[in-house]
Image (cartoon, rainbow, N blue to C red; front, side):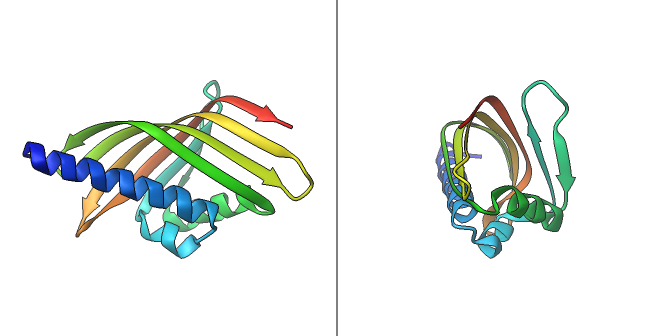
Length: 139
């Protein structure tokens, strides 16, 4: 890739991740699904135990829906570390996510998304995601 193409790819990846956070927080499941490859791998970990993994877009969406059901959420990412290799990118994002449930319980997590994105057609699609919470506050 040229330096210009790398900059364009980095911009497109940050836009795709911003859309991921927005569609998850607004529960736009069709918009979220459109960002994923069919056989997306999704996992969550506390940084110490083996991550719980799902494989496939439908399974991943079902898991995400179950996790945020009855909650208002806000996912914020920043400080991306982007490693481009042609039509594939490895990205690590710092993340802070918050869920406030109907019963008043709130959970705030701090950690990292470790992801693999692939360029398909004219867009970047999420191929794998591992969310690792290093700190979790429950109130």
